[in-house]
Length: 305
View 1 (spheres, rainbow, N blue to C red):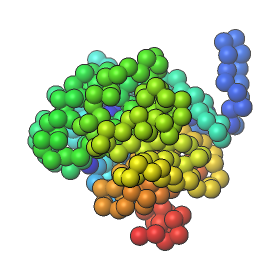
View 2: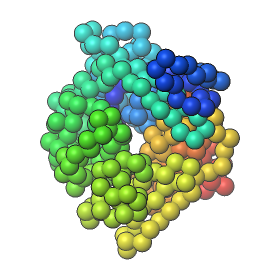
View 3: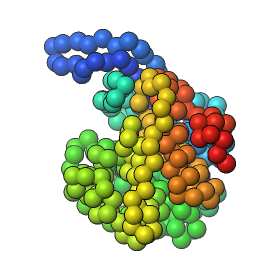
């Protein structure tokens, strides 16, 4: 699988009972530095499940960049397509996390520097699937995504997209034009509602339906929902674990779902794998500290195949 995305480090503060305000201060009960970004967390989650992953992105020639590239290499990800640009700084995200949710502050740095032309046909042909995260953050890639997706489909790849949050909250209609080229669309509840213009995630599912794209809406602690082929709703719950930090849980969900889906498992089983991976990732601080292995997922699912 080829993951094309942003690279940044996460500085995660946990146990925050409220958000800070200018002129004030809040205390955290925990802290961890870790590999960040939706794309990296998904890629590392896939690698921990034993899924072969190639990663392409842009990072600075700095310590944060070294840290992120080494972290991916250490879990077996092929990082050879990553570009290092001395004129840019690697992005940094500060996450303030509670047991229920988190708030993010991001310095974009090199995050938006990846372009579609970084991915030639030779690189695409090495992969059976292309995954893109953080549509709204990847400014240069966004402009060329339609042509990239069309080229990837022409080479026989399947495609998944996690839109991420729009920091400007404009959302727009451009993403909707991409969806007919996307096999799996993975927004969370807030993103699905904002993109579709609906207030309920179930209505958002139906508004986003186009006859091709499988849309899965992530509901955090409430699990996930999708529409079956007969237009009936299929819901899968989250799993009960000791939650420490929810940072990156949706990206680990993506990894679990895509791993199962690419291995030909049923829709229901793929949702269960996504839910299990999302739940397991909340056991530690940061998105990658406690991502589940295949054995841990099977155990959580009661020995499921």
